[in-house]
Amino acid sequence: MSRYKGKRQLSDIYKEIPSDSPVGLVRLQEPQKASLFLRIMEGYSHLAMIVSFYPDIGWYSIYTTPDNRQEVESILSTLPVRLTTMQFVSAGQLPVIVLQGD
Image 1 (cartoon, rainbow, N blue to C red):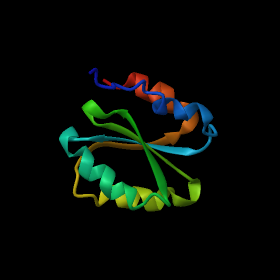
Image 2 (image 1 turned 120 degrees about the vertical axis):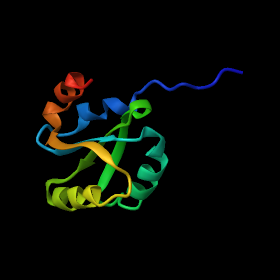
Image 3 (image 1 turned 60 degrees about the vertical axis):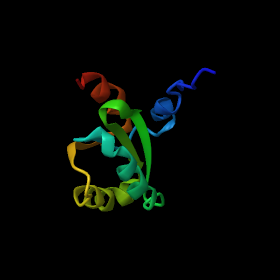
Image 4 (image 1 turned 180 degrees about the vertical axis):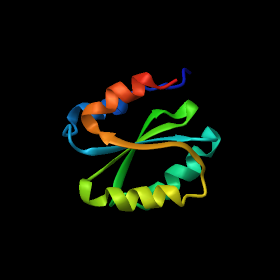
């Protein structure tokens, strides 16, 4: 039996987001703590949607509205999971930022 490996279709969601919407890019210092990060952020699903870009190296994007951006930033800064990168950009810049990463 072969294991399903996915097609990363969900990571193409940025194509459907308005280009001026704020998108947070975060990278976990310890990718093995992704489960904790995702479970905590599930509790804030009314504020933001989390999408995995490259979970094996800890990259996630956070889609929110302009009204909720500051609250989401404050939540991210107080998480028990350390982030090496936390940056908000407009959705139109997202493909460029991710390609410039390591």
